Amino acid sequence: MLAADHVGASKGILYVGDSVEDLMMTNNANRVRPKFAFCGITGAAPGSRRTALLVEHGADAILESVNDLPALWSSVR
Image (cartoon, rainbow, N blue to C red; front, top):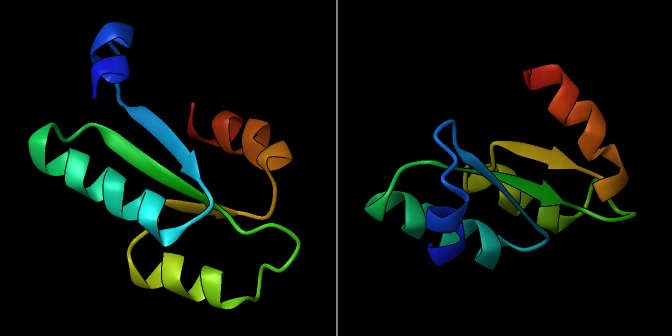
C-alpha cells in the first residue's frame, strides 16, 4: 500500500504474483483502496491446480510466464 501511494498511479496498479495468497492480498488491498489488478503466473504447468485456484478466486489475468507481461500490457493500452 505504501509503495502504491508513492507511485501515485491514478489508473491503477498491476500486482503480479504466483500464488492464491498473493491474489488474496490484492483482494484485501482493494477493500481499502480499490486500484489493484492481479495477474497470476502459473509457471510451466498452466493446467495445474494453481491455475484453477487463480480462476476460482478471480484473478484479472493469468499468464504462464512473466515473459508474457509485455504482450498483456500492450493489449490493455
